Structure formats: structure tokens, C-alpha cells
Amino acid sequence: MNREDIETRYKKWWEMRYCRNAGQDHQPFKLVKKVTFFAPPSGVYGGVELTYADGTKENVFQGSTFKPRKSDVEVEQDELK
Image (cartoon, rainbow, N blue to C red; front, side):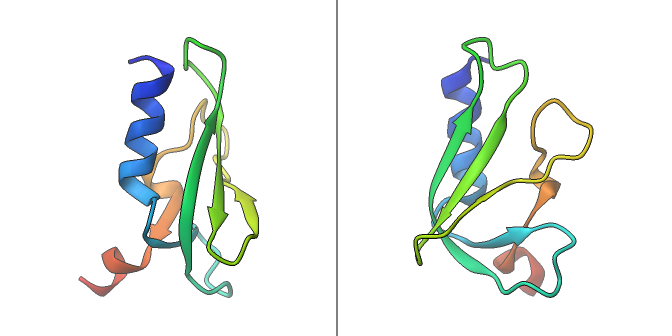
């Protein structure tokens, strides 16, 4: 997978959904307007920034992994299932 493929995957997971960083139960879910993956061209490692509808930005906390995992962000629709 190259950098663009990885960014597309993150957008599929989180863009235009109500999200928050995992484990942040005290924070409300907010609508993600833009997902930005920043990494070298190889995409072997990197980070993700979420831009919310209210204009605030937040980096996805990824712990000790090279790239954020799907489980690093909670999606409200997933919680309702």
C-alpha cells in the first residue's frame, strides 16, 4: 500500500462521521470534516489529523504503533449498533 491508499482507508473509516479519540469518554463525538494522513511517501509510518466541523483539529493518538489503527478512533454509529 502506498501513502494515498492508506489515506483513502482512513477517510473511509472516519470522514463525515461523528468521532472521538478512543478512551476519551468525557469528550463528545464531533463530526469529522477532513482526515489528513501525514507520512513519508512510503507510508510505512505516519500520523493522522482529524479536522472537525467546528474548525478544531486533533491528532489521533496511536500509542506505540507505526500508524493509527481503526480502533484508535471511536465512531458514534459503531457505538449505537
